[in-house]
Length: 123
Image (tube, rainbow, N blue to C red; front, side, top):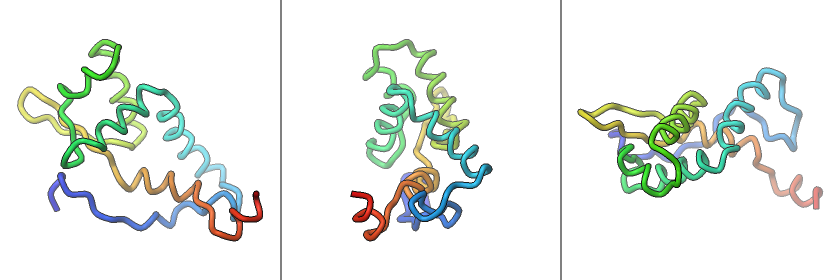
């Protein structure tokens, strides 16, 4: 599979949705880093922008224009997202290309998922 193709993934079995059982301390610490990385509006927009590029990857040269921050600030935010395990990158000549890691997003999504019964009773 090339990096431009995103596989359809089943949510990882590592995290039970919070509506079924509380998180373990270890899971909470691991997931908090990802949510913390997404808590910044610039980083959340960067993740969305990268994911929306055709083929699912974007050159860093395409990521600075939509923001009213400097290129070093964009690089810092990309580093935070990469260290949180939400994106990955590869240098190709002068440029660095970024793509979203679907497993990481599936893990976050599965944590917040509710099943029909739990969602209905919580209303």
